[in-house]
Image (cartoon, rainbow, N blue to C red):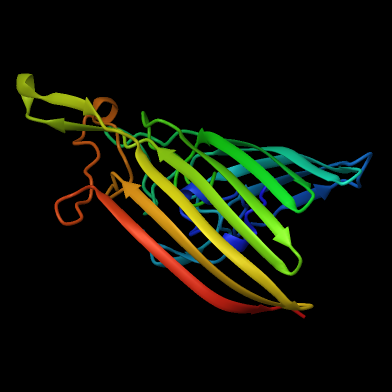
Length: 277
């Protein structure tokens, strides 16, 4: 919602994902538009419903309760024009139950409690006028992973969020754009020592900081030349799904190391041709 930064096409890490249903059988209703407003509602009994292999017995299975279930998504959008000014705004939300079984089909319990139920919320808006476009979005909730709302959070671990702002300027066939955003996901806690000497500490959130610039040239109808540059700074990268040592009694999250640092920087430059017909 509210995105106006298409020319730069930033690298899509967890800071920039949408609320998407992925591979699932869904019941969907999309309303007609009323005075600029429309809305959509969907229900999916089981995510990732395609055929898979049950790790516990090596047989083909569906609805094996190892993914989120009973997912409900809804969104409301407004689109309108006021003279030379165009406006878009929207809100959305999704809710789902956490998996009832572990990835290998075992029951949760003991020091491996069931993950938290999933919820995610998003708001966004964009305005265009006289060749300029500005947009922003903010998304937050109890989820993690590369796609918003697709993975449940382990027990005791904090929620995730991201914000994104972007701008474009159109000058004849040329479009210039820029974007900046940050995403945050809880890293849980870590523990050192044993017995009376055991110490539990809260870890900083995993943080992505992303910025990018780009341009596109509309050479002919359906034919676009484009170039972009993106910078991604990724801090505190976990080696596995975060856990909470205080809650589970386990060791908690450990973080990856990149040449002795828990931070990595990624630079991306792309130039190409897009053809649509």
